[in-house]
Length: 127
Image (cartoon, rainbow, N blue to C red; front, top):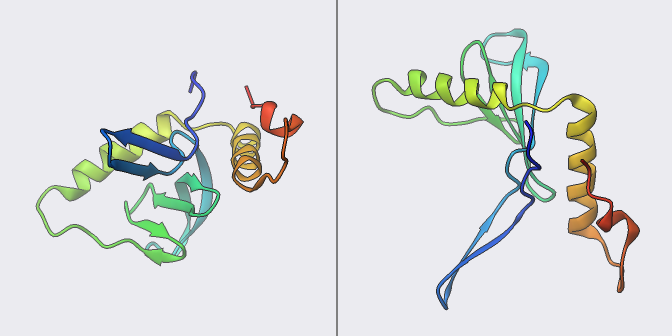
């Protein structure tokens, strides 16, 4: 991943419509226990923001997990093909563990910073 990820924020459309979005582009690879496969498998882990935690997808069975609960499987044909393509794209864009940790710490700090004036940690954006 060459560009910097986008942290959580709001997109404003017109005068009244404002849509809040979670952090985008903070993704890493990790080996976790998959409760569907019943073994340790490779996962793609996406950081959803300081207040939202992570979403994980098993590379083997393609199931997703949010807050420890399996995501609902779509009731439509070819959903596994679509999910496999989505997971592959995230896998290819994944950060190295140290860079992932730096961005998640930065996101947590910027979301919870109480400094009145300039803050050195808020200005120290990871590269």
